[in-house]
Image (cartoon, rainbow, N blue to C red; front, top):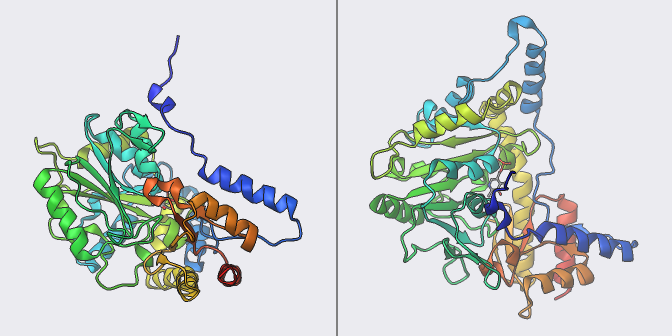
Length: 405
Ligand SMILES: *Cc1c(COP(=O)(O)O)cnc(C)c1O
């Protein structure tokens, strides 16, 4: 007689994107003549760049010949890719060696799996609003206590509200956590931590023997000088931080799948256990490596041409983000983010809830976005717009929202 993992049964339904889709389709069915524009897209839309396509083609050809065929990849990733990433870290002044970089199929799986190497008694701290994977993966592991339907929070999770008052920068919590999840530039708020903000967290983590899991998926969108691209730009991070890297939002690999997790060898628990060998063991046991052809493509991103191409690619979305941010600001709306991230965090008008505002925009401007309350209680009265649409649609959506006055 088998039993299920009851921790899975504790997960509250995730209705955010399905409800958004349902409302979108129902409206379109009732108003077939109206053109609805989505600024809710959470996926890239531009094609892969020429460097990636050409690297994929040559790697596919190699796989077709016995002399150049590649079977299982090394558990932790091919050296050609780990070395290319280590070179980039060096260029940023970060002390990260190639063998501290673990290649994977993306930051979502790594951010969900990383909790496995920590004891069940650890207390996690997350930003509110938050990327749901950090919390849900800990719920599945039985680490979060009981869920309170009315507040939408877990009893054993420390929430760090990111609000207008604190500039969407998480503040050091009163209760000391063991594991701290930070995402900068942030999804959904679009805010980015400055060097001084992140240095405060690194010092705090080191003083309290806590670990920071730093999600850098959006580093390519940074435009401001004093915003670090990596937590390892901060002195002291080697003893307290894990960094998650993704090829999804910078190089458009959402459908190709490639990422990396960086664990410095100096990172150990207070009782002297290093995390690096534990994650290596996990990879070796549960993962057979990212595909050779995809790792080859990933390495092409680090060539000078590859770098220029992804700057141009990200530039397309950055232009959209700037248009939304400035257009809505000029239209009298209160908007945040958009400068170092493809997300604009918009305050709802007339005190509407996030979902009331969703319906209002759909009915009156035929624009779809994502209700902020779906990312956590502090997201209530906010609305997330994304820069992943086409420029034409983005311009038209902003004009429509402005006409509402
Ligand atoms: C999109 C995104 C990722 C990237 O995930 P992949 O699995 O690499 O595609 C990671 N973290 C956050 C916060 C994201 O929004």
